[in-house]
Amino acid sequence: MATAVARYTAAAVTDRGRKRPSNEDAFGFSVEAGVYVVCDGMGGAAAGEIASSLAVDEILRLLKERKPENESPLPGAAETAVTAANEAIFSRAQRNHRLNGMGTTLVVMATQDQHVWILNIGDSRCYLMHKGKLQQLTLDHSLVEEQVRLGRMTPREALHSPLKNVITRALGTQSQVTPDIFELEAEPGDLFLLCSDGLTRELPDNTIETLLNGEMPLEALAAQLVEAAKKAGGHDNITCMLVRAEA
Ligand code: CA
Image (tube, rainbow, N blue to C red):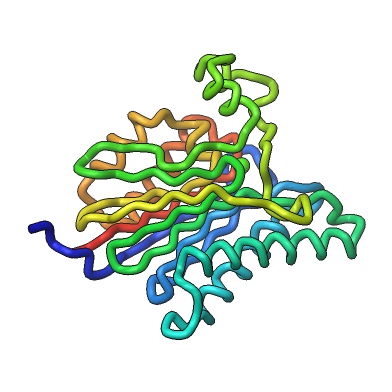
């Protein structure tokens, strides 16, 4: 019989990168509440930073306040928190014209024992390392990735396309948004990576897989990924969050 997942451990590292003047990525997690969030904001001036940190704060706050015994099951609560974060960003942008159009990507991991739910909007990703193999769990809501999935563009063309920054779904830019939701069962030893595109644009999946197979503490592993992305160019802000299911 497989051993049960008893707990999760987590660590995250974010970095401005080598080209951008500021860091518009944001992250937050609560192991106790079973919630892990990475956001990559967009918008002029400071708007991107405001959107991404609003989203992280709102989702963490709502899921930490949740009382599991008398409230809706976790996946529903996580979806409600995403809706609330969308409204918080959207209404703030409506009230302040300098923040008009701000938004953020979002990837959320919610855990309850071995049950894991991943919610995503935009092109921040969640990967799973299972028995040393890396697999991407989320699908990017980006113009080029959608073209690749339709067979109209090769992955190589997507990487070099002038449209590669266009995302087709964002949190906070419209009054309503729907995340994709993926559900799976974790096994002890499984390692989840939540990251912004500043990592995945710089490093191919096989490099990420090799680095994640290194035997070191989570914090050092996350820092190593960020350093590799900076060395590969560091064109964008980089955020890596690692969550490990433990026996
Ligand atoms: Ca980015």
